[in-house]
Length: 263
Image 1 (cartoon, rainbow, N blue to C red):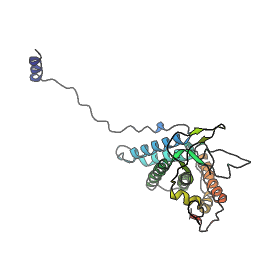
Image 2 (cartoon, rainbow, N blue to C red):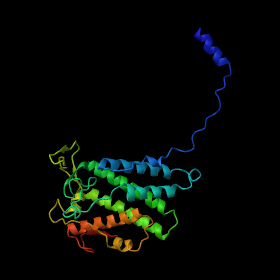
Image 3 (cartoon, one colour):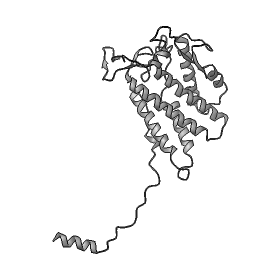
Image 4 (cartoon, rainbow, N blue to C red):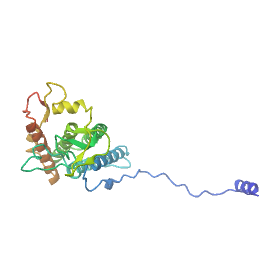
């Protein structure tokens, strides 16, 4: 019967086979990043994946990966200068250019974003903050050079431009946006927007004035930095153009009380 069969198995010495060791590395697929980003959902997904990859590279021991810092810098340089489109300024949305920003401002810089809720705004800023921390930690452990200084300036400038655009965006309540006849998406505005967003835009309380980042020092540095790749030069121009257009659109002068800080 089955009782005698199992007793026989217990009495006999059976070899379980050779031991299989635990893999030394957790798979880190840098090629998992998308090749193209078309909307805010894709941008958020790519930023989350970049954060996950940076976290894995950060906690890999030196004996297993000797170039973790180089990989993190290269990854974030690719994300913020090649993969992720930088936001357009409000001047570029007006004639004669009349450009549209489908990711960061599909309804214009002064309109609401149909895909961005207040919770999504908060989470997106946290992801950008953690990616900036990863980038700074990685670059501080590498040898300095003139070309590498340009990468530092431009990547952090791109993160600052995206953060500024996200902070200024008018959010919506959670739900599915509805399409209009002209193709624009409509959603219900957030009744309780972030006080920081209202302060930057100069709305909300009486007497609040718009605030902006002063890009004077960034422009001065951009004149002499060494652009090691064409993407660095394009991203540098996009960052400078965005902050200058925001500063011009809201009427803030450099060095005045309306500027948050000078680069």
